[in-house]
Image (spheres, rainbow, N blue to C red):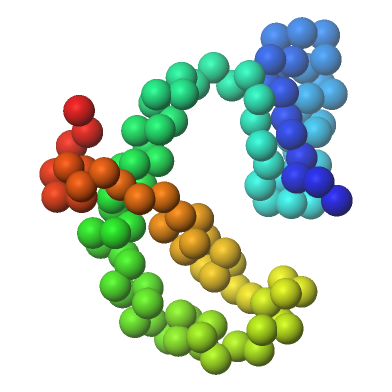
Length: 112
């Protein structure tokens, strides 16, 4: 199975109903999806990713790793992780921490 890809460019065409149906199905079956032709500039998306990373590092990382959820994940049988029974936080935390911010962004609250 592949993650659904929704082409938002099709919303402005005669295929808008079909595209909305695909979006609805992706929400129901997957809960997430990839979007193509959404019109959001790459620079803005990169800034959002950096701000999300900064917020996580500054406000959430320590409390997450000290939480009972994270502690239970450390003791979880690795076979359970392989078949996807781990809580969603186990999947989200590595995504948020997978990139490294430049040193200038770790202490400042703004992006230039």
